[in-house]
Length: 536
Image (cartoon, rainbow, N blue to C red; front, side, top):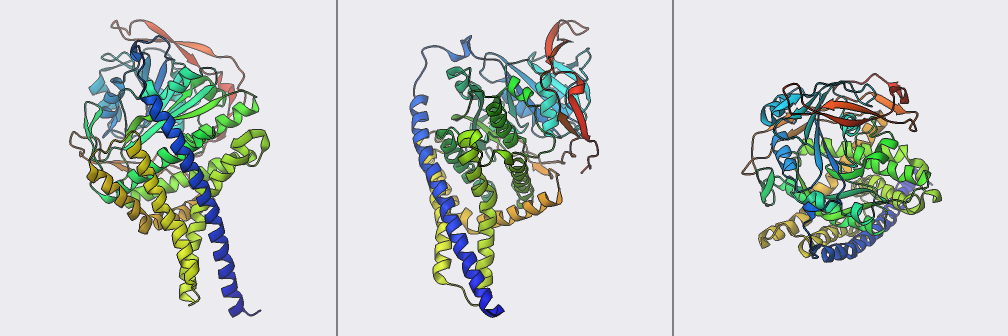
């Protein structure tokens, strides 16, 4: 067979592989979306039930520490904390971790919340970069601020987790607005099944162009520009279809880092958040699955669609590209780190079905689709493009993509609809079409670039520009530099006992009373692995 004859044959074989692969992936997506409708139906029914008591007054709610890692978040930190301080929940503490910010984040916190330095020794065995100071708010006793050297988001979360006091903790991003009753709703799995519930996540929505007053979203509107609008469509599909469908299968493997509640003891037992990943939210849930199955514990991880947190999404293609490349690299990192779970019957449905299918759809799917576009272009250039292949590939990608997007809009309108104006629904339908022409193809390019960055060992976060939350949905802009790579710690002895740290609380001029803070095991539990991190 000559080269001229071999080339078209190879193109045809590759095209058939792409068609078959994407047909299988779309079957998976369809099953997940249908299961999500059944799960959503049950949630809507339960949401219509009103308890005969005031939830806020119930003594049965477990305490929650809200951890807020902040790195150069001067533009958004005040509104975010105002939102957290007004949450309707009977037992909370807010722990802000200033992760070595180079802007005025700490100064802003001191000025806005009347912070007083806590006069006590910080334990040396906290698995994080050194902690400089700890502050307590005179105005809000439940607000604690930790100032530490920069180590990355995971490092900041570990510092907050080890100095927190409550049974549960909620990890939120500092640019996140949590609705007032969201904690009461997201904690529901822990009330239903307190022995087995280990993690629960809520829905993330796009706050761009919404009106924020007093730390709460007062007026919900779709973003005025196309790129954030397309991300609204993505978020609806991801949460109202993807998360709900996996929850129906009892195989939820991802809780958004912007809003999730976890059992503090279990997360400490697995060593907290890893420093060598850029998607700590995906990593921590997969590791919890692995640890709890390895130790033969019954557990459940849940998604609750009604509680909502609002976040600002990138408004420029360059910033969005950096974010999505980071997400893709982190997904590959987590899958590789936990490859022993793939197709392993020991890990039940998570290992034999959920994780392998997720990897095929979310990790390999964009790469295969991108290869399909390359095959189309090459076949067209060689004048051997088969119209049947073109239309089949178009229907499997663009056509089915529009169907899934509209499926997500149906779930929104049918359930907890926040976009009541019919014109907003019409715009969402338009976004569902628009995202499949150009934007979808661009994301396959981002995935390929993210793969190359992963293979090169790149671990930067990139730069995030935030406009901040304003009363009219606008506000000034702020550029948030990336965290430098964190130093790596390795957990070596998770069975050591804890000790307590006594720290002063607010009250008298010298700091007032004291509170007992659980600390982690001795520092010998951690082995320094990679002290050389390249600053960005």
